[in-house]
Length: 459
Image (tube, rainbow, N blue to C red; front, side):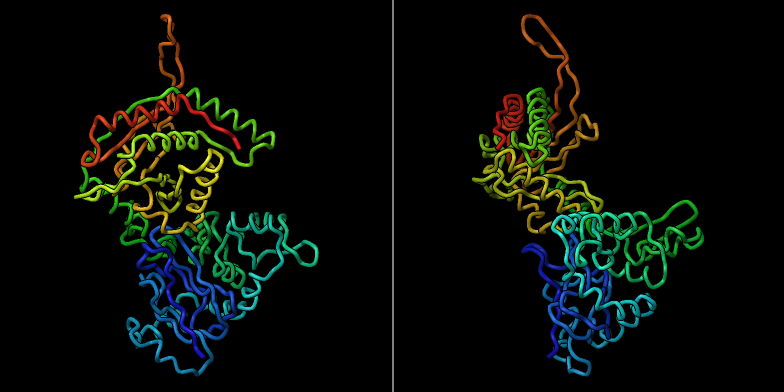
């Protein structure tokens, strides 16, 4: 009996997804665990695995289409089965079911043959024996296991196999790897996929002659000339642009700047680093982790800041759900650590790293990227040497803290003695509709006080 494959719902806030790449086309045989297609929300990328085996009988959309969640995308069954019930109500069901494969076949004629012949190899991918360390490294480096040569006992993939695959350019999507194996095409050092992964459309770019460059750039190029190129915005850039513009247009934002003595957190950082080197800590606690802990403690003392402004009402939170601005290759993301006020410095550091890594890998849960998920956000540009900046509020949150670099400033040490001591810059942007200037100032000062007197237990 034929089965329909729907567009999954990734999080409660996601209403539609962009179908970025088909891994199986009409007529392809499919095994359980095969990757059918890749898709993305405005923030993260995913792959859909087949839950059944059979043959792809219909493909109802094209690559690049924005598809509502829970909508029919593909039909898998046995050749000759009647699938009319799955086509009813599908967008342009009479045409795309037949037209989409024709477009795909014309775009990647050779790769299609490879996909057909290599389907069993892909099906085995999820069942190959692999050590835990090798699996973790493969996930970190986005290595395609189907093209890793195993050298471990009884055909087991071990860590050195993943390292060798990474060195040989295995950071490719499954389709790109198949195309490369069939045609001998080369992949660029950095592809257009997530985290620099090479996609099928990237193959051959590194060796392509200059004259062919415009064609290789594909559909993202809207217009070009001798000295310019107009490219359409990516999905994530559209979302960022829309939310930033809406934030400035729909709120009364004001920024206060203040600096805090950084000697205390620098001393804590040295202590944590020493414990890590001695093996007494299993997480590298950074200055930013200490800053976030200080912010959490300040928010508990200023509940009016730990709020959402809803126009004619204010939502007060009993817990601190901390947002952290993360710079990724796909653009700015702000994941949230729920109930951050329940965490120790070690737990907070671990959670912050996990959500940041998930953003960079494209595996983040869309629900914790929603602006409504966090109650307050921290954006740290200190590592880039930025001394002062004005962060933009992630509405409906009432405020956001910008963290600047550490610079030496003169300070009265008492008894008429002055010396230069390290100070860290803090920039608080707040919504004046929700918070008065006096309270914002006191809150910012409280953050500075928390930083200068921070006490933690490393356990």
